Amino acid sequence: MSEAKGRGRDTLGLATRVKALAVADPVLDLERRKSLLTSRDWTGYQMEELALTAIDTVTLKMDFEDGAKHEDVVSAVARVAGIHMPDRSTDEHTEVARWVLDSLVNVGTVDRSFSHVYGVMSDGSYTSHVFSFKLLREVAGLDGRPRLRASDEAIAVLVGAVDIDIASEQVAADAKLDALVKRGRLIDAHRTAETALRLTAQYAEHIRTQLDGMRRDIRSVRWERDVQRIQSDALAHIEGCIKTENTIKGNVIGLMENGTEDATPAQAADLITILEECLRRHAALQANLQEVGDRFRAEQERQAFVPPPSRSYVDLGHQLLEPVLNLPVQQAGPLLERFATAATPPRRPTVLFLPDLITSLLTIPPESDADDGLIIEPELDDDALLPAFVEDQYIALEGVLKRVDHDGIRLSALLAEARGVAVGASGLRSLDHLLALHVLGLFGAPRSDPAHGTVLAAVADHCQLDDDVFAGDDLLVVRGRVSGRANGEDS
Image (cartoon, rainbow, N blue to C red; front, top):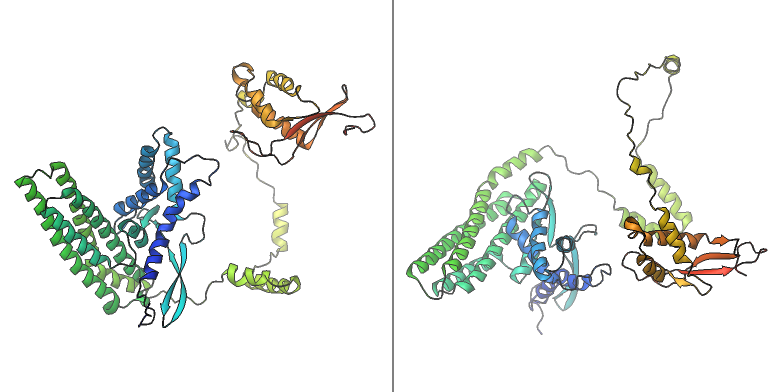
């Protein structure tokens, strides 16, 4: 195994391949995480396919200026989920789609990014690095509402590699597409055209990300070295792609006019639709690149009077909380007091002016007009006064609890019995709720029966309740005898 001749070079491509595995890991991890959702049975859904559908939908719906709407992505993923499990409800398909989308956005983390550690061999030494990436990013849309954009890494999951030269890959895909069309293999050409379309979207996102630094801080980029070079290279690449794709489109049309047995009009129409979408995206990117110069000058004017930041923000977690937790209380207290004093802005104390105070106290309050209509009398509904449970349900509850003896009966068994008792048209569904509330009350406050000298109580013995409606401990309901001297305690 030879060492890298240049500093930081990965001659074996190990780092590139590790990063490719890291990008795919959040997608593959969805299949493992769905089994941890004990409250849901999503066994039949193929989470990797749903995740790729979400990334694909965002990639194809976003453009240079705006991203994809959440509801569009959820709808597309829910349709595929419906194909996986057609016997399930539409609400479950939508719930699965939202869970997949939130997982790809990495909702619940601070910066919503994934990270993976990889290493690079350089001059005989091994250096570890952290590869941080995002799959789907939430950004503000043109209307101010959140939109979704797919990152370069997310699109790389679809095309099968990371750290690639996107322009070269796009040229290679167009060349392969042209060769397949000339040979009349439109089925293979359709798959290659979809790859070329994703590369087109990835290239536009790559250019937009490179130019985004200009909007954040004009001082961080130089026109000749950064912006102009990106603009000229991208315009030359787009011009070549447009020519190639127009040629391929003409070849497809000529192929259908000549007529072959292997190609069908539907296949050719789908291929032409994809090529036209590639041409549309290239034209939009070309128009945006031609306006880069005007935007650069506009950003110069806008940021000319913006002063540089004079102080850095304090990272309360790493710079304050973690060091303080390692200190004794005697040392941490004064430090926290000084920080709170410095971080709290000064407040002007309230000073009362005596003449104003006397005037305010002696001023007669204005009389309120009772007819001004500001006070609205609430209209109470008679239904709100109805009890949650009827008398027949309490009678049926006592009948169920009569079975409880000194050996005790589990709450799960009582619930099963309660659900089999018919108490009128309205009480059938809620008798189990009344029983659960009653047993929960017995757990905190046992009920004594002086007439029979017994006490009814619920005991927790760390047995989990297996029920479709309720969760928690499967309480043991027992009835024991008490002595008069113990006043309610078991004898």
